[in-house]
Amino acid sequence: MRILLILVIAVGAIWAGAWWVITRDADAATEALVAEMRDAGWEVRWDELRTRGFPSRIDTTATGLEIASPGGGFAYATERLQELRLLYRRERAIFAAAPGNRLDVGRRSFDIEAEALRASADLLAGEVLDRVTLEAEALRTEGLAAEGILAAMRPAAGVEHGYELYLSVEQLALGGAAPGPLTVDALVAFSGPLDRAALTAPPRLERLQVRSLTYLPPEGDVRVSGIYERDADGRLAGELGLEGEGLARVPDLLDALLPELAAEVNAALPGEAVTVPLGAAAQRQ
Image (cartoon, rainbow, N blue to C red; front, side):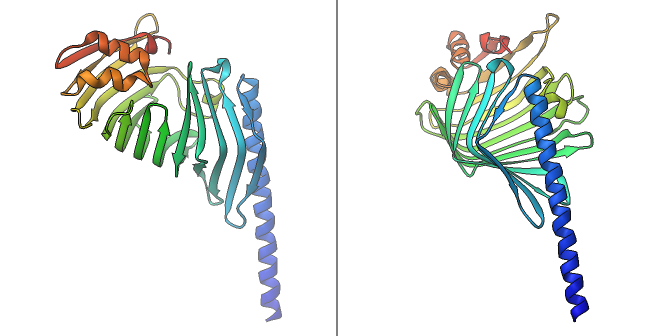
């Protein structure tokens, strides 16, 4: 009995030591990544960063987190972001964000109130992004209220550096209008892989194909499809096709979030189906 007790204590001590070493390696990897991002011009800061999770997980929590890209085209801030990994499956990470979030894209800034916002990401060999999922019970910001959100991304077969995108929203209200369900099936392709190096040298978006976008509010359905690709001058060029009974409401729905695109759609109306050429919003990408 005494020998068994000694063995249990010894195994526990070895496991605790192994967990401590692995978590220190994880902390060092985080510090190295942040240093690389800062050297590339990113702004990354937090109020507190701590790692817990003994005995089987590596749980890292950042409070007061703020991230901004070089040049200020993108920024994200949250009260708290958690990253959770299993010791024996470190290539898969689960993220959970606090209710209060802020997202800056270009000149637009959105204060987002989220309920049960969480995501997961899987990495392939070489730290290349494989599959990503994002879920939220609800998201609210100026001009938008959504419930039952599910988004997913996976590598696109036969498309170099391409990913298939899927989005489902059970109820989406834009511009204060009555809500309706939204589904999106799309494909994107980049000039290089989405790996660790992409954080410091992001690949260029080469192709965006909206295979189908269906929005069904009470005012009438809206269906969108189209493709944008790089032209000879290196700019995204293409068209979006819109049709449905709710087209007349599209500019009002988009105005709070994408005013440039709303102006393009408004210029193409009236009609039961319209084609929107590449506008100022996409030209800036």
